[in-house]
Amino acid sequence: MSPDHVQPGTVNDFIEPADVSLTKRPKARGPESGRPSWRWSPASPGFRFWAGVLLVLCSAYSVTCLTLAARLPSGAPFGDWLALWTWARFLVEHPTTEMYDPSILHAGQAAAGLEASQYYPFAYPPSFLLVLWPMGLLPSGVAYGALLVLSLPLYLWATVGKRWRSPVTLAALIAPTTAISIVAGQTGFLASALLIGGLRLAGRRPILAGLLLGLLTYKPQIGLLVPVALVSAKLWRCAASACATFLLLFAVTSAAFGPGIWVTWFAAIPGFSSQVAAEGGRILHLMPTVMSTLLQIGAPPTAARLAQGAATIAIMGVVWASFRAGPTRLAAATLLVGTLLATPYAFLYDMPIVATAAFWVIQERHDSGGCFGWGEILVLTIAAIAPMTMPAEAARPPVSAISLVLLLGVILRRSWMLRHPAESETATQALHCGTAS
Image (cartoon, rainbow, N blue to C red; front, side, top):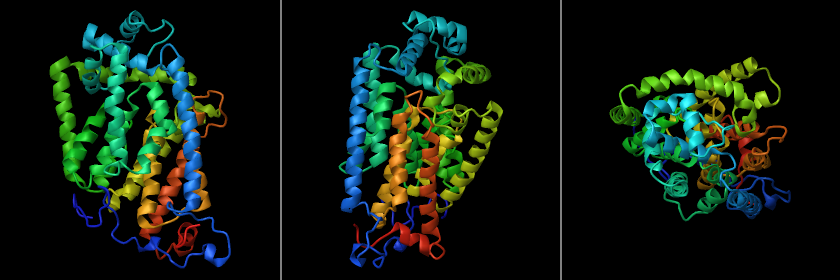
């Protein structure tokens, strides 16, 4: 693929392989052979029945989650909305550099209504202050509503694109990760929308995609794999746009909050990392990362950190290989799932990107006329259920990272089969059918 080149055969903003003949196999074994088929196309009755049951389960969980949250005085069981709003109030009432002073910030948060035993340090880059400042001018409830009204539709657009009338829109709304992110009151929808939207538009609208990805630098751990993807796919205009957006944010924040604000942030990072390492045991069950999973099962901290480093390097290699053919839907899904395995610091409210990856896997199979094997159906089921188990601190074993690895395996297997049809004839018969059961 040539740099920043839009190929024919594009579906829904993504650049897709021109030859999808591998997916159409009229002689694949199905019910007409007299033997039961465990391969379902997304349009088949069997798949729709499974999807319907899963959607009912997810709906029940989401309704329960939102109902219980609405009955709590704070409205945010995870405490993250209160953290955001106390940051915003502190920013309005204090010098900006004090945001990165733990003792002063803690005192300010307590004065704003946070319990003295609670403390949420501010580790975001200064660019996030541009979002916080207007929120600090509003009452807590109004600010929360404004953040939700602006970020949730943006996430839905990024996920479904022009297919807003498709069942995927409903599925995205009732997904457990959506309900959890609403309850958390964090910026999960905003970060997810910027990453997903940037990937969706990277091949066809590189300047706009770069703008979205540049704005994502307010949460750098979620954009960890983006440079790898852009360089691998040779999306130079998108990369240049992202860099220009970051430089603009740097200039604006330096002008608004003082030229030393970025230096202050860099100096505060080691202290924040030390605090997370010291107090992370209370929140490990809310983190779907490799390191947190290993720590939950009793691995030594050094071994967990080494394993996380190895996972990060491995995922970078996987993303590099996936984007060599361009920003396809499956390559984007690889990056979305891989992000939470590559970064050491991510939370449950960052997982809407995983729901989107699962939706894109199903859409790709539907658009290409392919089918799912029973193993893939099982993986998709686990990926949907895993976020429901995370808020329960006593949940064992921790399945979040395991579900991510399994889902990534499904995506990579599919990608390999599409790129090597001659070598994957046997595996193809296990994934595709001509007549849906």
